Image (tube, rainbow, N blue to C red; front, top):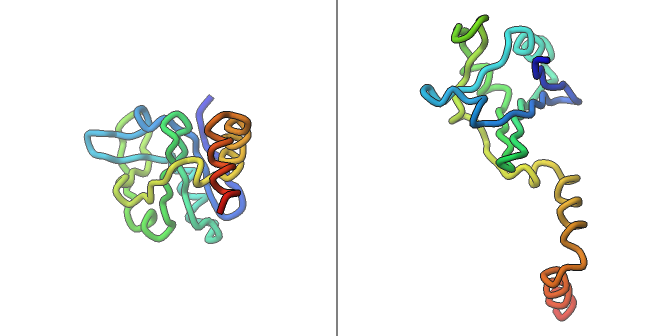
Length: 124
């Protein structure tokens, strides 16, 4: 099954492993033509997000920079649109997805570190 990603609200999300998804020689990512065509057609799409949960990173590509940078190239079986990774805003995945931060906090609760932080915060 091909990972096509998902459109949600005004964003396109795709979970990847950057070690495998990036064409490192050229420092580029790619998307299939049909996905890029949907992004072009739907002017409400403001961001393209690539999420690597293993690396705990999210790379956010703003629509304007993305569209200005894409070009069609054939590396594998079919042509895809490529774009440089340098135009991405790179953040930690937990910062981009609050639910993950809540899950992390829940697993942290009750530990000695949690107690130290709780005491420190309440003593101010």
